[in-house]
Length: 281
Image (cartoon, rainbow, N blue to C red; front, side, top):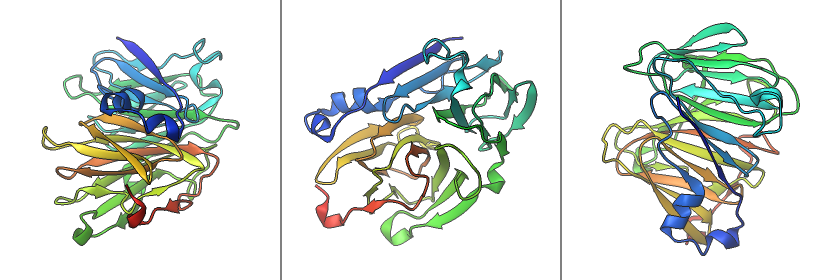
């Protein structure tokens, strides 16, 4: 088992206005998130979110972060959300084992000492996408089957953004300190997400682009200030960090899915500042 965690730093709008394509990728992009048998995490200084992939095969895996975070164990002062986008698997939380089929999720509250990840079949391993944010209170740990998510159709074919937003960890149906997560699926023949663009200065966000049926599919992820946008070309199962002041939208060469995760001062999903199309540059 290999455990990796890289650090990405926070940036001002003036910083990224000077970045070229390689610098944008280095500062905001994470690739190779799901490596069989490994844990690959990224620590971003944007609201101190930790995100990444846990891909168990023949052995169970556990995230062990103590001295790195200055705590006794990983979730001593953090909460954790996870969504499985791989084969069937399970998580054992403080000794209690729960099965997770594809697209099932879990919210794990602050103070949980042990979270162990396993796959049912090493040949088709589970792929646990995990997101952790600082917490101040313990809220109940909760299994979140995909069928129980809030399924919100949005967009239309004329604008090439017909999709379903599946709210998984959402303040309207459960308590968390600040973490929110969801899974958005574009319908065939659609490419745009989150357009018209917006910002939400009170929350940062990460996007994991995933489930590309065609290996040549690519998504152009747009970010930056509305009048000074940048883009990063995304491959399957890669993630990008979006600062709270930045727009976030994307367009793919075919339909795709993505997992979004937010944290910050505000848990109101609809609290956003729209950007007029004429203001985009």
